[in-house]
Image (cartoon, rainbow, N blue to C red; front, side):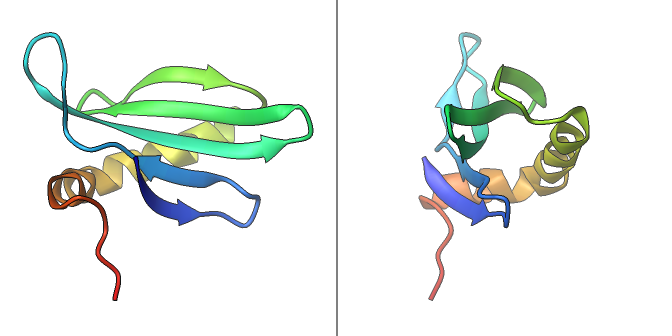
Length: 90
């Protein structure tokens, strides 16, 4: 997983390299996670379907919609960065 960003509430966003699904199609997973006193709030999306693969904890539906927008708007960049081995920051 490659780091993408960290939000002020402690949510960290990471994304996978290029994966292949059972049909041989390229996919990427984008994972949002924040620590809580009892573990983590987590949600994981898959590109290109934008489906939620995993959800646990207390993210609100509003937060999840914001995350979905991040995934949708950044899809082309996530693919590019996954092929490049992560985001290159000077």
